[in-house]
Image (cartoon, rainbow, N blue to C red; front, side, top):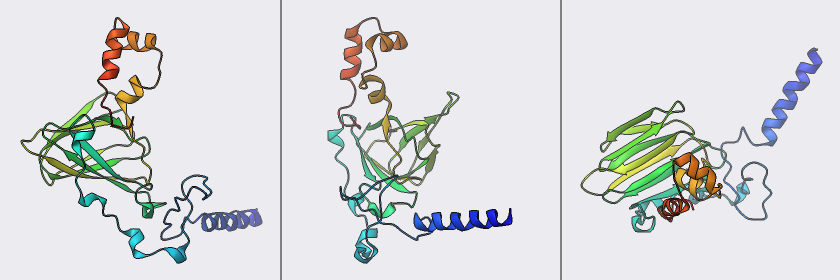
Length: 216
């Protein structure tokens, strides 16, 4: 038994080491030829520089005019910011025009915090037992969205708004509720019955109302 226990700990240590769990960083190699199992392999450490850890895209505001809701999300997940590979973190900058909305959505792999940099934002989430928790936030406020919960944001101020969000996954996922429901080829009869719609015309109107550039 003692030998088996020793072997288990030795093998566990070897597994941790070989998969880089004990490493300080693992800048992602995003090249299409890099082998993938679950996540991204590490860039050759000899080729890593301080620039790999710098992300500057949030210096520029997102173009709120292209989404159909007068708001825009700029992402810093592992795909945009390879340095976060294996570190369990990513970020989002949200820009809002007046009345701008980030439609109801979920992040299946992460919890999220929202920090208001500018303006006034009404935000909230729906818990797994169907309760809405919502607050109007001002500059400097923080709100949290538990993992997998449906949540939203709307600018309720008189000018533009900005928030800086952090998520505890390098690839949190971004699933817009309207897209999943109306653009995923669920049979029309199912949607008509579920939504209380009487005919296909109503369904077509709903589908046409889905914002054009929120994860479609």
